[in-house]
Length: 432
Image (cartoon, rainbow, N blue to C red; front, side):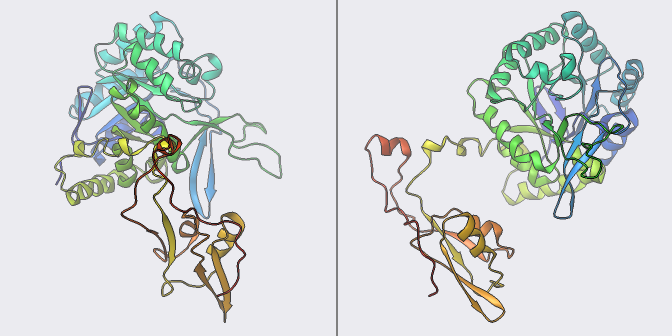
């Protein structure tokens, strides 16, 4: 089996699978059970001045019968006494010395408060601390959480406060509620951050009860914006992780990836785009700690199939493959192909292409089914038909010219090459 052990800014972990700072890491008993299940590390639920939470806290977005495609929460940081948390941190670290234990922190924005809580966490045995600059609700209204992560200068300064007291690595957890994730990441590095965690949750309102008119989750007929997580946020998280990994300045800092991770495949994608560890929350809230068993086995098998002896060989292999649009090859041509043997005649591809794309599919009724075909001159290779098709590999996208001369938009603008003939548009669909 491939070696899944990782080292992130000096912290050893038996595998890259960590629990994110959230309800699954609220107590020492929970984290102990998670480590017994196989999790390599955990980030303790955020410590600070204990608060009072509402009794209604979560709501979800379901899709096509799939529960919790997205999860929204209005829960704040720990509501347990600081002394209780610190005692449990010490007990867990003593019992599980080989597992990574990071403690999430959030206090008011002054040096003394940060110095004090960083020292308390380290004295309790934390391998490192994670500064919560990402919470988008409740705490942000108090000048904490995302209110810090959204202002690079604040981010840099408060990381500096923590680093003045820290002797262990300092992680900075960033908010996705910004136009560009790179400036806060650079600011965190300038402040001395040893690693960056992202993403935290996305500002959201998941829905409104159409009978009572109350937004969800409902607290006495009212609600508040909350933090959105789960499978629905994964594409946003992948983009932001890769944006930092590609940046010449911020990309030199190790990354702990977060956002919609539920399987080993999800984890592999984050690692390919630059993450060293991955943090999981919603999937555990849905399915429990034991999902890590499949994640470990799956990632190990995948690495074996790729001939990789260590997960570290996988890290960052896709970073350079993400480019600005202007660097993409305009002479790369693919077109759709329908496997008539596999086609079930549902006609969905025709509807999608005709109403929502480029009118490049012809169709006619044959008995109780719809026969479809690709209109070659009209197909622009947009992929939509293959995405909506319910039959795996019935519609595939096939490259037309493997020997073509590559040409980017930049090169084309500079007159360094010519475009191959472009597909036609405005085609009238008729039966063959």
